[in-house]
Length: 231
Image 1 (cartoon, rainbow, N blue to C red):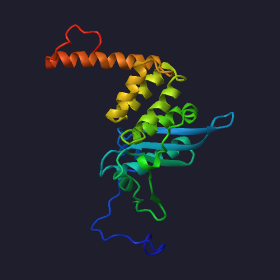
Image 2: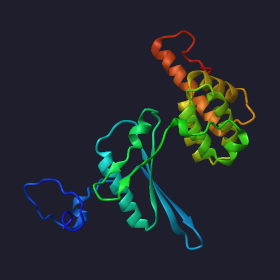
Image 3: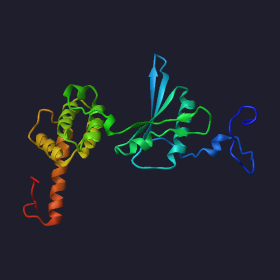
């Protein structure tokens, strides 16, 4: 009927087998996305859109088959339009992540929305960072190895003062670990010197760095590290 009545091509085959129609049995129980964000509207908190977020750092030949499942299951659960956002820190991966996926059904080609470093804005303005702290964190992760790293870090310090302790620690670790060595040293020096935007996270991070420095010096047998309190 697909071929003769509806005109849809059917591949050559040697057997037609009727399989179990209980789809919950054939979908792996471990099938889960990296994250799902649901946008809600109105007093009744009605789902307006769901976003399936995947982080992809390398080619995974299973994902073109899993991603359509993530989208359809999320759409069925929340009963709203659903999009697939694939985030990568590797510029070369953006093209692979954004390839159209032919599901085999007429009119249904899933094209993931690929976001790489070039798509993430460079946030160096303190006010912009305060308004959207997550934006400056992503900016650091995407551009922390560029010439703009130091300016991004300073913008983050401006935003860090207004964050709760948990987010401050998490975001700060992400930002500093994403910085190139020169930018990281500059930010650490600003924190040590009592920079205007110094936070509890900054003091904790510097203390941790000093402790690691002492331990590394002791292992290497460097003079002046044993018993030192200054790192």
